[in-house]
Length: 82
View (cartoon, helix red, strand yellow):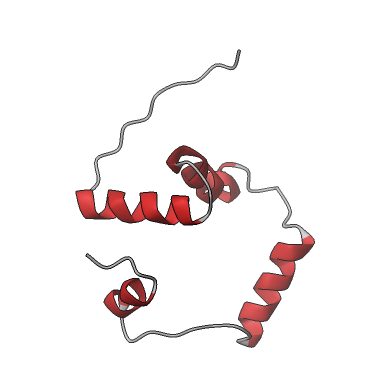
């Protein structure tokens, strides 16, 4: 059995809802979603895989990017607006 601890973070309800939606959209629990986001910070020496490297290269070249006027427009386009 692994050694775990509970982490409590207070965030606005609407932000919590958005995180849950993003996690679910990726087929992840909220816990796993947050750990994946934090993984590069917690393990900085970890190297990206080929898929990640390609995504970074494509992004730097502007391939497959979408742009929005503001964050509200992005949330709306993603169906995450309230």
